[in-house]
Image (cartoon, one colour):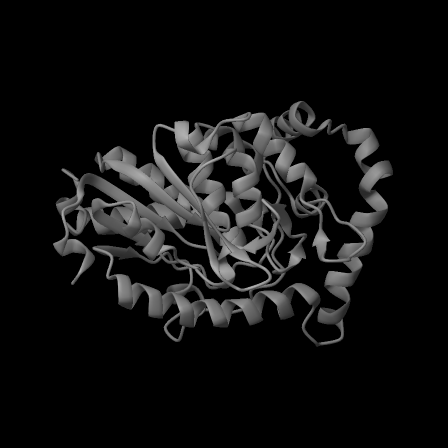
Length: 329
């Protein structure tokens, strides 16, 4: 029996997929859906989809976007919190502090929009759906990319990135019981066979300089949330940041893939296959697929173009009438 044949609640559930920096496209998708009047009542998020979805549900997305818009490559590395690698390259403590500054200690069950963060049980490989408890730890567990961010322990279970087993959380979104579902897949048109342009998913070679106003605002937000002070940032974290810049860049100079390329590309192709399978099984009413073929794993400093592509993709669906069935839930 199809899930759509069962009695469902009025409203639309979103399944926001994984994709690291490419997940900023989710911001553009949400913006256009809101403008169009699509009644989003639930969000299932995996990895970066959990970050954007959780921030949206908790009312902190605008501040996070402002922070991202002011990032350059060096500030992204500092923000990610490089560590001596044991179970991951980055501790993610600063990211977590920023999330707390934007969301506080909000509980998932008290959010105005139903929310579930999808993570992976590191010991069994099982999908874990976090539907209650503090919002920030749930988000942090969902984006713990294997080999990149350190795993998180919750209720005695070590959790890692939800994208490892559920790159587009359509099953979790379906379980919410709403009458319609829209999935956002950051994989198929980003490095699938029909993707246009280069397919590298590691650190891209573009140069991006945010506007002085955006950079100033970003620093102000960092100062407020994690004690960022420009003069001390280089002293406290500069050596670690410069070390990881060298590690991530050395292999490219030798013509071989770097650490981020190896981890990113390996996960990417596995996630593409899993996403295609899950979407075929759950049959969402609409799948939005932003085209992001040249975006690297850590390219958060390219926020403007990533958000714009999410908007473009969703506006295209709106203008072609594909969103019409969702306007009344």
